Image (cartoon, one colour):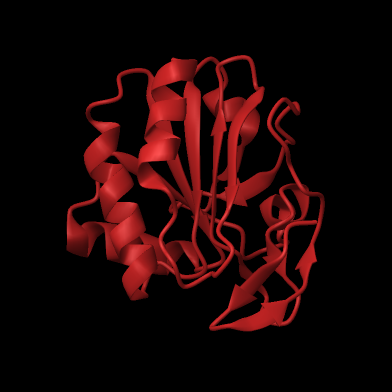
Length: 166
């Protein structure tokens, strides 16, 4: 498993670590309208899956904004931002911040995504910061488990991987 810290304190990640070359695990999360969303719902597109602990915090806010800006330039690439925030909070945040190119999804109900991708922080019931790129045939082409959950991910690395997979 990936080893990460949250505010410099080691935390335990639950689930299965995902690696480049793996078939992307399926998951079931909630859209802002409470409908269920799975990996198959975006089949045929390259996906950047941006994972954040909570959309209402500084780095998570900046990460979601950055991928929102980049999404409009990436063609057939869908950007999914997943956190355990409630769908209502995600919807409110997106509306207040003009976020239109990223789909925010909630893993609050059963941590299906967190377990499938090995980002469920046991001690906090949050998701660890991570970025995954999944190509149109559901192969994982890029993985970053951010070693300190309060740090930014490698935006350029993820964007370049998405362009290469497109």
